[in-house]
Length: 502
Ligand code: BES
Ligand code: MN
Ligand code: ZN
Image (cartoon, rainbow, N blue to C red; front, side, top):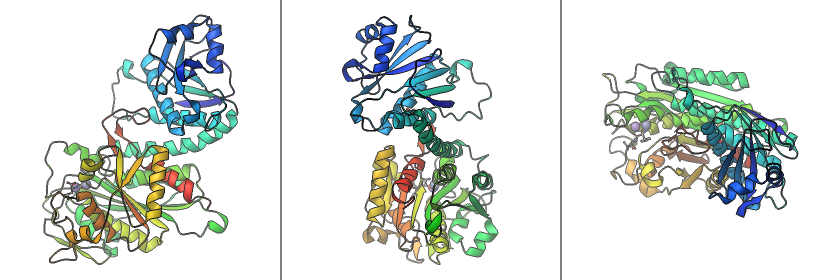
């Protein structure tokens, strides 16, 4: 889809979308259109349930008095209450409706209104970003798409006062959305084509944007002592990889600053290993690399918008397979940190991968903070469903900032407790640690977080358990079903609001 911005003027062709406020108060442009169509808008509103609330839409086909093929009214409710998120939702919903109607182009007009929380031109950029997010499709494996189901909309023009500002704001958002799209692409890709080596090759493509990418193979990881990560991948025909991506965008006296670090679980397929998962739903485990996908998409977004900050992304890429060479329950591995781990369940593999990725990251980069993302536990879905990621942290400030950022971008996080008493559960009788707790199904996500904390070495750290968030079975205005790209916007917001240029 192509996006353009213009000053307010009525289009000569295509579809036209105009705003209506609460209780069907027409926006200035809607008023103008109503007059030109001899009251078609007013008549349509009185014969429908349309009330001008956010999420209300009303379509008027081929109105006489205008050259456009259709007019869509969209409700904005009380404009002073609108947030960027509402505008994104509006953009996404418009795309869906227009595709259902077979429209090819649309002009969305956002009139200036006193009392607005944020300006029409900022709103315009949000509408376009939401439309772009909502237009995403993973279609590369559809060879015979029926025409009727193909999206038709290819062009959106958003009209507002000060459109040059909107265009500039959108350029930034567009880079962010490109990052989200990369995450969605990676998450939706099946495991026969996306495995550690091919994933690393996708990361390599980011060098074009100025990201510095290093790939460690198994021999290098062996030398570094990454026995925890390597143990997970040892049953797979596909070799494991650790990818390190650096974006050094800080300038001037901030150039030498410690980087922010993001670490991702990249289990390209999780069969459970010898502790094999049941067959039902196992195909979902192709997206067990969601954390790594988010970190990679974030790096693309930051590089794409040339963020003035130093950031490092580290992803541990493995495939967890049962095999004659696979790790056995009861095996004891030595992690890079030197701590030994008794692997009581080979299906608790994400924490083993992260153990070495986290230790490596803090050891090499001494980052300002470290945030890991992982589809770590089924238990977090029991706790929080698909509305919030689980947040675990050793740092209140970082947690609060993540919470606020989550509210602003609609990617929620909810903090859960950690304490010594939970950590007791992962003491092994014969090694330093064991990879599952003694508490059975109780507090599974917390126990997993306690395990990770053994590998962060006092760096300010937060863990996001995104098992409930990486994939969506429901279509939402800005998140079509499939890989969601969760976390890219959350972390971009965190960086923008608290670290960039500061
Ligand atoms: N990748 C899974 C967690 C998961 C489950 C993600 C469902 C998304 C949807 C993880 O590796 C796993 O298998 N965790 C186990 C841990 C248990 C063995 C302690 C789990 O959650 O059952
Ligand atoms: Mn598992
Ligand atoms: Zn897993």
